[in-house]
Image 1 (cartoon, rainbow, N blue to C red):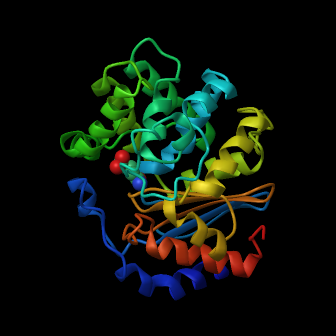
Image 2 (cartoon, rainbow, N blue to C red; image 1 turned 135 degrees about the horizontal axis):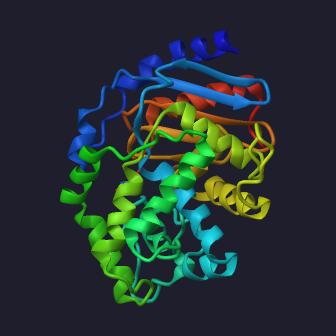
Length: 304
Ligand code: GLN
């Protein structure tokens, strides 16, 4: 397995120069575009290659965790009523709503509006408490107590995140959220700034692949029904408007983030984490997708 992973990284390395670092969050533009890593977790253990231990901010890879926490803290019905599962076919931060269309049915947990709205369903008296709950849950699923927020990235997004503010005010204008926008975004921006490695992502993905059960301890960390809900949204919208292309190339549920990470879930088989910070035009790691495509071909991972 290690030889296979190293070979794939070697073959895909040329793609790392074809993408562009995210710069709308200025701190993300400081990433090293040469970094490339992969980790696979399965019943055969943990296999890593390249920069698999390098830490980067989760960004949108945290959205499945926000969805899971909201499912745990309220009901599937409450989550589905607030944020539907329509694959939007639009960029992650699009203002793609006509006056008639801004209802929960037309947003998705894997795009910004959906994730911002779902922060309100996390239990906690304050948004700081809600965020702490989410961080602890993320640590528990990743099996890594040392996960923390990158304060510089958090402050950078907070200083420049006016598009997310606008999206949140739009949700508020249409009665979908009620709490103060700045407080909700405090939770969302912090969540996006949680630092993780490929290994952390692969471990989270493996629990999702294992339908919520910790593969090591055998403890059910969240209900299988919630894992199915999350995996279905990853399959249909985890790569935003790149989800169709990703299904064709790779064929499994996955979630990307503008930090350059991608988490891949191979139901009942394995969890994957890849990292390369240069992105394609849709905000997905360009080399990361190539790595996953090769891996999918070699290990026959596509469900199609
Ligand atoms: N924090 C980023 C944002 O809200 C996350 C987007 C992403 O990773 N696609 O813009």
